[in-house]
Amino acid sequence: MAIKNFEDLGAMEIDVLTEVGNIGAGNAMTALSSMIGQMVDIEVPAVNILGFQEAIDYAGGPEKTVVGIIVPIKDDIEGEILFLLENDIVELVVSTFFGTSDIDLLNLSPDMTSALTELGNIMAASYVNAIAELTGMKIEVEIPMLSIDMLGAIMSVPAAQMGELSDKLLYIDNLMLIDKVSVKSKMMLLPTVESLDKLLRSLGVIA
Image (tube, rainbow, N blue to C red; front, side):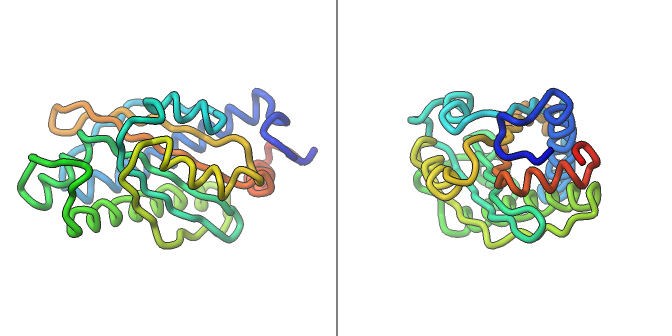
């Protein structure tokens, strides 16, 4: 049975997508650990399939200011990965590379935004590499786009780009302990419905 929309997903398909989300997120957090040179202890990520407005509400509401990094993906799976970085994880990255923790999200220097963009690129590549290894599919990441804005404005970009192709997304909430400090990273996988169908077929979930 072909998957034509997210409503076609049953409990088994959702369980498999959740596990794929867990594996990919684990790889992405390992990449983060390597980049900042610190141990990252990861709790089991919370994975949910949500609509765009649900994801905005779940992530803190439309007026919450965050760093958003959109990474387009292509080849066997097409769509986007969106990372939402809040103040705590941005401070961690900035202090690691620039020796300061006194930051204002709306006034980051070009070097700081460049480092965060590279972080998103490395984490996205690690995420899709885990899925590619698991499924045997070819997946590539394209150039990331970073935006610092209210969550509603950031989410309007993938909603406009992907809304006609997919009305839902895979929302992954990562809780990490870095140097005894608890931080959260929010990640969203927005595949086209066609890509979702290919993914589930490659995993043998649907025929």
